Image (cartoon, rainbow, N blue to C red):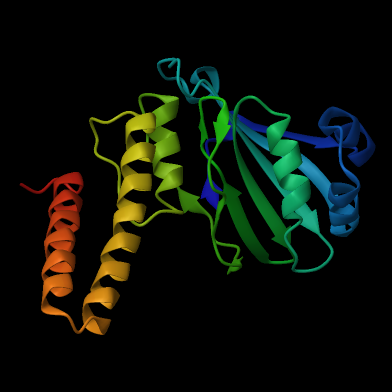
Length: 209
């Protein structure tokens, strides 16, 4: 998926039994893991391995590769493993020549929504030279998200702005549908005023005026 620097390579394979203990794995996660052939920590993205400046918000990113025996994503296992790791993570699930990735940004103590790519033929993507781990993390997030980050914003700012944009997209779509269904002029006027506000906020968040 991503072609990281060779300096970030770890390739440490874990026994499932050891991970179960670390995760305090539920029965559901253990059943989910039946398709897993191996779990490997492939890369550690850190100031040391990237030769860049440290940062307090995104100190390191762990990149895991999970090989499976069929084209199935053991999402419950991944979520419980992710919950047992305090650092940010990227999970690549591999079946033969196909790969799918999952990520969820850890905003403080809370977990956000998991985003995933589609199953794709193995095709490594070069990553840019970066001056910090958060800068690389924003590049990774862009693989999963539609709206790009601003160069000047932090990862937290980018995530919060993206979540708001996603909500606005839903509100714009739902309000537009309500306008098309509505027959009363007064209600249509109210919906149109609301829609105009949503669109204006969206343009502002995208960098418009």
